[in-house]
Image (cartoon, rainbow, N blue to C red; front, side, top):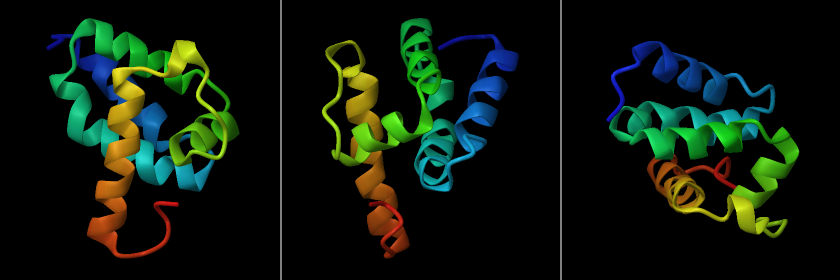
Length: 96
C-alpha cells in the first residue's frame, strides 16, 4: 500500500470526474473501494488507464471494444468485475 495520500486523492478525483457519466459511475466507486489497498505498481496501472480517452476506456470495460494488450491487466479485470458488482447492487441498467 502506498503512503502518498495526495496521490490517492488525485486518483479518486480523476476516477469520479471523467466527464463521461457512465465511466464515472464505475471508476469512481471502484477507486473509492480499492485504491487505498493498491501497491505502487497497481496505482501506476490504474493511472495509465485513467490517462486513456473516456470513450475507449468505457468501451473496454463494457466489452464493446477489444482491450489493447498493454491495458489488458489485472486492474482492468478487477474494474470489469466491479462493474457487475455495482450493477447487481444498484439493480439498474447503468452498469452497461
